[in-house]
Length: 251
Image (tube, rainbow, N blue to C red; front, side):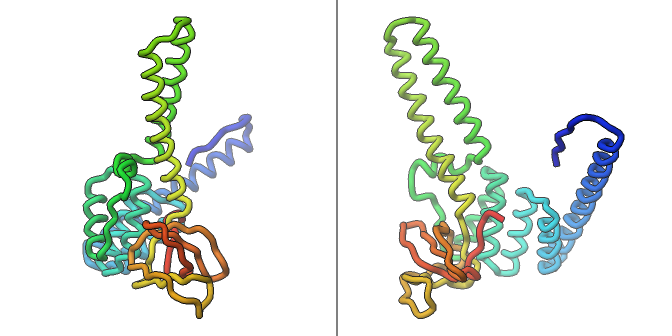
């Protein structure tokens, strides 16, 4: 937790010390819970391990390793939907981790799913996190600005500068598109945690079924209506599913 300090006073210092003490205590408590949950996992006590990891998350702490271990616990229990959900959450924090990718792919394979990105651009940026893409966008924007200044200083058309601006602009657009896709996915992405979810044409119990989603399928949430969610699957098909059958990636 990061604190922004204002004017110093005795009262303010006391409050800061109290907050720091509580934060340190909470972190120590979470560390002990994490160790206990890991011990339960090694003993094949997966329900206790899951309970421990979830208690840490309820305390407001989250990171890639925590979600990764939670996903592994669900996988060992055979709950593939919840395993894939938490692998997805772990990927937000460590998108290029090799072990995570292997376990994620294995869980998807066991669920009978193909999670390979459909578009070449998505495959290109799949292993890059949101923070890293933001840095790339900042660098590209700065590079374009510098090239434009250089061109103005020269005071004449320079083919090299024009070509460089075109290349940098294309890279900026592609990176920006990928960045937006990842932000949208973070905010709207969800995973089917039920054994099977029936997507209907309308948010009504008696409505006609449109398609069926397997356990662990990823979807994008578009709308909500009482106990229903309107979702879009990978091929663009849309339908209404029960809220209880899916879980948002964003907590």
